[in-house]
Image (cartoon, rainbow, N blue to C red; front, side, top):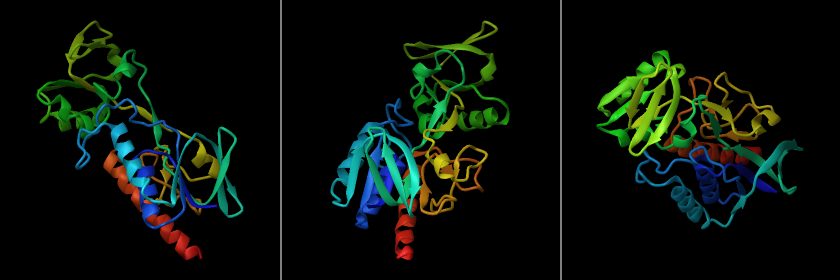
Length: 279
């Protein structure tokens, strides 16, 4: 019986495992090997690690966690989770299972890109979502924003001090994007072509796993899991952290490595307090 099972080996889950390990809590971290930033070559806007490849960050985190004897890391995919007599049972796709007193979901989301040919090949490189994470890399060069309405105007204004020019292109006007040696070419349906260094879009996020739904966690209109300030969901004993969850007062989750790390630490602290008060 683990005191906590953390599902998800991204920044939120790794930080949670570290925090729980430092409190000598017996914890299992389960990592499927699938990450939202899996196509990103360099992580940015992360203090002391600006520009570090995400895989290198994960490897460093695992090395640090390995120093704590009460933390076990398992590279495995989870098939389903259930409440089991005051605890939580995690069943793996290989048929194995584990049980924990508390459960932390840090499984993240998957991005559904707009149906524009060519986007996927550049996703995480020259096609991005977050100007904080990717805007500076296009400094002094032309960028385009493929969004509609007020959202397009806001992202465009954010990028104005960074880029040489910012072109707003409604997503419906784009026929395809083509990779070039030093940028991408946007081919519009009316025949116009625009060459830019980078393109900003808004993918549609979806929960990567059905576990929150399986457990009956309350969801928000954004599609995220509802949590309180320390990551507790509507189901007692179940916590969530990272870009899959946010408090009801926020419009959506903060898509940021730093925010995910902070959320993982808060949820782990919440679990520790929860375990103490349950005794």
